[in-house]
Image 1 (cartoon, rainbow, N blue to C red):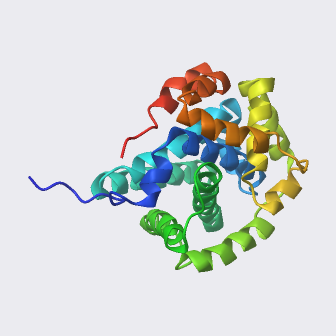
Image 2 (cartoon, rainbow, N blue to C red):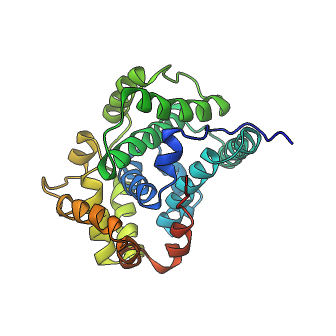
Length: 256
């Protein structure tokens, strides 16, 4: 029996990036930083769900993206349509439209942190592989009927830089979100989050958040890579993950 075509083909670098729990965790960490600076973050405060459980909400965004990546085309499209309908309901309740650039910003964020996280933990990506990452999220954006999407990876780099300059600002929402991160993670895990973010975020995000120039994780990451070779990485994940997410993170590993 013929199976449905996959949304992301077998062997794609995107499946390799999103098929490892540790890479997905770093995508989440970087996204948490940039997301807090987005000028449209007030939309997620409107429902009250983000400040009540910021880790859970952001983690669900990342895992939803991952679900789409590992689905067949029909299932992925239904998931994307569901996202669109959920946002439409929020717009109706608020009697206002979420700006198109705000949707693009989330896509851009996922592109950047997919590449940055994999390069931090594995190796540099080729230009063709970066284009592949772009292509996947371009398909998502197209299905959501987003306007003014860049046509290729090179054009995306220009648009992303423009987004960083125009669409980000440190606000009371930013300050509150980071307070909520610390409250929900605890002091030690919050420290790990911040130190990880320093290795992933673009310079503009780094500056707006007032990060120091040195990250302790620059010393830890090489040791973590070694721990994977001697099978100690699961122990380290147990150490840094909140209990409620441990089982979810374990399920993120997919063997290729």
